[in-house]
Image (cartoon, rainbow, N blue to C red):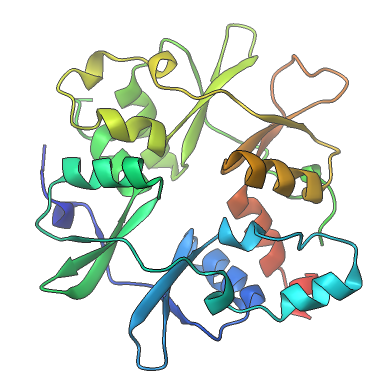
Length: 269
């Protein structure tokens, strides 16, 4: 198993200016299929980071036209997190994992002799785990992902990590024999065990976190409120008439950002 951050980071840094309106930030995140952008000042220096989760801050789905207008005028500089957490390229994957878990963040700016050269995220480390073994607004149903990764509770964590990496998903839904969701395994759930020698013997049931569900006919406002309140990045979508049946899909912060990035979205007018 490779050991250094530089072996698994994504070279290069995607950025936006601090003056960039958040509607355009949504477009950039959607275009590049990423969850964050580094924010720069006029001299090109990185001063913060803005994520898809940051875009859910505030009640931007409110029907109140005045508050919506205020939110439309906000910029990356208004919602970014600062300072940016960074790590040296020669640091170990274990150190990066510990930082992400302890600080409750999803990515670190990678530097070499003080200069930014890339980013390492939860997803990048999930990929490392997988290779360790041999091995407008509207309703939730309008923007959810109908397809999602699923596995049984006895699935090895290495198999789940490989599936997440291959599919480009950040999580997998754990179900019982009847398809009822028991939990969700995300990259953050896998990080604490990434340096463990016996991780190949562990199952997803040992690392999963409790699922949060939402009816398919719920509003995006409700979805955003739940995501923000619980600091989750995804919700399992269920049939309100059959809540104990197989889930209908998954809605994530990224799905909502993609909706914001649509040309006909209120954010692009």
